[in-house]
Image 1 (cartoon, each protein chain N blue to C red):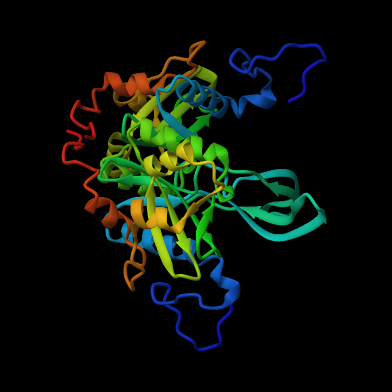
Image 2 (cartoon, each protein chain N blue to C red):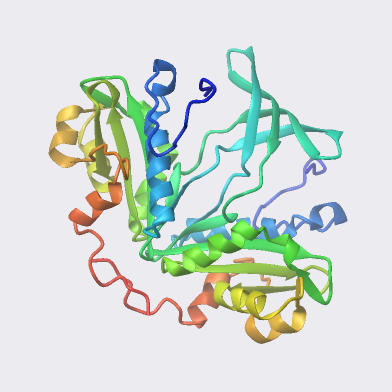
Length: 196
Length: 196
């Protein structure tokens, strides 16, 4: 993004408003939140790099390799993972333009398998879904996501399901999208996961 | 890698021996081990994709985007992370040709910071170092790595330090490099990290 000269940019204050940037707004909000968590020593959660298959490299100068041919791969896991007080956290985040439902085609089948596995290995796994035009962001635990898929033939999850089983995440100033607070309120961490 | 036609390939049995493939041998061994952990429902540990900065894409056909310009970025975290019985696991793996010491230049300063943070957030963090020509692979906990760096001015860790403070990981048939077993023997997981 380019800004007029002399404009002060503070990453924690800037919020993309252009329609062009809106598709990335959720990712931007989560990255800001994770940055806040890291800087305030609350948690260590990162976005994984997008998997790229590099098929050709070039050495145009002494500075190093340049990729001249490659393509994006389908991710085999989720976008975000990390640690909060010793507990493994893993989630996927998606935005939808729909005002009524979240199309399941947004999540790859192997990502669903991955989220289920995380729960089985006693990690905390969920999805964060933003209904962009409603400006509502929900956290839905993997167990509730899986329950819906197993008991419904529909290819999308209605908003009403998020209202009933999901948990709204407020969009604030700082931290932007405090999803760990939502998890804390759910009391899913228990108090006995301390390592010695 | 290319194999003569008709050669049966079994990923779990194949072990790269050519000098060309040797540089990747540790990564290959860890990937096989992680695959074993996942398939046997022991743990969920993945290698993160290599971070790539894509600067130009092309649309040569309907199949999708092709990267025509990009470069590799310095990773801000480590290569491997995941979950084992609810506990967050995070490590970096490196090989060295040296028979006497491990050059610290192999690990980026922000990776050291990251490993320290993981420990502070009650995750389990360590490095796996292979002395290639000795065929010896060690696991060194982050605390012992940090202790060495803080108390020494040398730019490399001598093999003797790994022998004293590190833990040898046997290279076996299956699983190839059972580092979780080493961690279990260290009893660092305790018995009280169960979630309710």
